[in-house]
Length: 543
Image 1 (tube, rainbow, N blue to C red):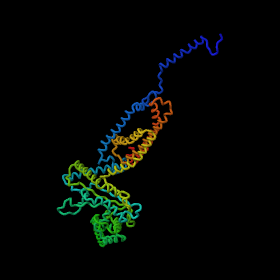
Image 2: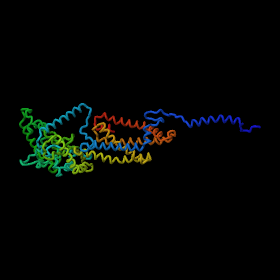
Image 3: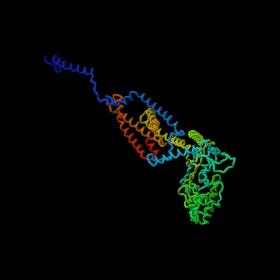
Image 4: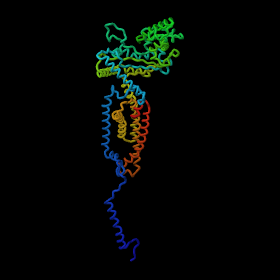
């Protein structure tokens, strides 16, 4: 029979069947017993699929890792509060920079060693000499209030050029002098002559160190002042007076004078010295502003050239002030605070330190409650149109610095809100935005703990608080890099088999970029170690 087209014979069919069946059996055998294949050599950091082991742990235990990080941050912040903040002097965790010098410089080390040794020896001698003695009430300097005044750019006449400017400076001192409670804290004038039955409570507060004592003298003899100025204007009279004043005014070093001193010159020196002493004796800031205040300024411009009297005036005028240029763009003044607050019998060093700390706290609280708001108002640029005022006081410097940092941080809230919203926009997740900002903020107390507790670096500058802005910028940038890589991973089908493989790819892709940017930033901050300024070094290490 002829064979139809497309058909096969029984013999051919058997041959094909015999050829096909063994092949199917082999495939079934391979599928039922697959051979394990290694795509990557396992290591300490990676598994047999090349995935990072630490990433595998994060992917498998995300809640555990997240909770551990949060608890760790909270615990370190709590320890920081106990170890650093509570132990800080006057509650201020920041170091107050008393001296800025190169800590590695041999001269600085020698100077600091000498200063510390002198202070220790002087304190030991003082305790030994005063053992069992009574320290009179408010007889020792406990603190100072420092005012600095600057003429506004529009005030070409300087700080003493107008009645308005002088009265504006006086307002800064009146904050204290017009308060009846200031008497309980001021430094008493123990050079004041009192009666035999007088007590410490009968003494007056020591006058501030300020040129305003001239302008507000309790009495002012214009004729006598004019005569003094006329005498000092005569060429050669200032040089003559400076030559003879130590002997004929202060009775010092008379043996160094030439024997042939002209009697008329000696009489001139004694008369002029007596007149000047009479004028300066009423400089106590207890009177009204001198009507002819320009005469006061003129007198100061000549007294600043007199060696034995320049100490009355040169403290409150700038270096450009002179008879030829009677204009001072700056001025300053000091108000003195005294201690102890009651007559005190000298005790042990530990007892005296405890007493001083207690009085410092009382003084600080009183200043904050009664003066600080007025001081801030006085120092505002808008308060006076002719001058700017600045203040400094050791007792409150820590609180003032913290207040400034707090205000600056409040102003910076906008930048952090912007960073938060931008993270939310980029990640499309409120949760990731909150977590990202949480890590940014908590990196500060964690770094502070490592810096102070682990590394034992005791100098923590106020400037270090600005590191939060650096962290916010770098932290947000790293989040953006990571999320961009995660989005890119969806186009690589070979890594989408599971989350571990995908996240390992993302970490590898972003890790190098984030490490390089962090390393370059770190290197830039470490370059601050070459500066001799301790606060800059502290900021560079902390940041």
